[in-house]
Structures are given as C-alpha cells and as structure tokens.
Amino acid sequence: MRMHMHMLFLAHLRAPSFRHRRHNVALAIDQPQQSLHEAIASVGARIGETGELLDLDRRRAAAGELEAQSASEGFWEDADAAEATLRTLAEHRAVLEQAARWEAAVEDAKAAADLEEAELVEEASAALASLDGELDAWELRSLMGGAHDSCGAVLTLTAGAGGVDAQDWAEMLLRMYRRWAEGHPSGYRVTLTERTEGEEAGIKSAALTIDGPYAYGHLKAERGAAAARGRGRG
Image 1 (spheres, helix red, strand yellow):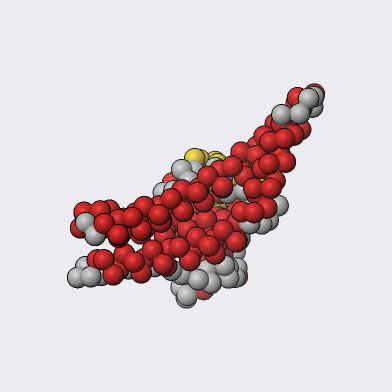
Image 2 (cartoon, one colour):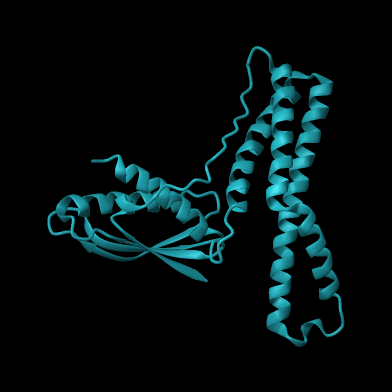
C-alpha cells in the first residue's frame, strides 16, 4: 500500500519535533577500556529507553496470543484474516528478536571489557557504535504511530507560482529526496513516475514512488527537515 504526499514549495511546512534527543557513543583512543565501560552503560540505558518506546512487554503478550490463534483449529477458514494475523505476528517477532540482539551485543561487550584484550575491546567498541545508530532508527520508528506511517509513499513536488526560483528549488528538492530514498538503510525502491520541466530552469512538478517499510513515516520526518532548509534559503 502506498500513501500520497503532496508538497507545494516546502517553505511553509514545519520541522518535526521528534528529534528531541541525540546520543553518541564516543570512544577515547587513549583510554579504550574506560571508554568501553562508558559506552556499555550509555547503550544499555538507551536499550532500556527504546524498549519502553517499543512496548516490548505488550508485544510479547500480543505475540503469545497471536501464536495461540495461529495454532487454533479453523485458523485458515478466513484466509485474509489469517494472513493479517501472521503479518502482525511477524512484526512483533521481528521487534522482539531485534531487542534480544541488542541485549546480546551489550553482554558481549561486557565480556570483552572483562577480558581486557585490545582487539576484543576494539571490536566491541565498534559494535556498540553501530548499535547506537540502530537505536536512533528504532526510536524514530517507534514514534511513527500514524495510520499510514508503515506504508510506501508517492511523493509529488510542485513548484507552484514562485516562478523560476521556485522551479529551480523544486528540482533541488527532487534530487535531495531521490538521493535520500535511494540511500536509505531500508533499501527503498525509487521510481520517478512524472517530471515536467520548468520554463527556463528546474521543474514545474515531479512525482516519486517510494516502496518499502515505513517510507511514508520516514518521509514525513524528512519533509519537515527540508522545510527548515527551505526557510533558511532566502
């Protein structure tokens, strides 16, 4: 399923407020052991926070109920309902398995810190830095509670009545969104489905189809950031 998102020269849009926190795992080169212990504490705390945002206890309970349903007699009598149940179950399982991997990574880092071997400390530090980035992405996803946030998206850009400057800026936005979608870690599939050239430069309008999980939710967030850039352009 894809949701449509229309943009009319983005300067009037507001930036989102979800980027309220930023954590960074910084490792001191001259004190790797101490830095690893600090990173373990920092990432461990973030896992707890993200677990609350993802409501892991509720997901465990829901997954148990759905597993029981899927094993019940007559489950496949309504094929559409059964498939919807299995999709929901798979989503819960994916989140729970990811959380378990985070916890396992922290435990591995603790073991490396206890052994005090330089190579293991370096590997554990790199793993925690990568995990910190994963937590950023999952925290963002947990805030996407909109009805269509998990869908793909069709993005339409329109320069409007701003003349050549607006058409030039619309083309810049098209390039920006295309690069963003093509380089997204979720591996979105991006298709340019419409493009109308401007009279002198830029474009009058364009449309991108972006297929992949949470494309619409991520795009709403990126749209706000683009709005902030648009306001600072004048």
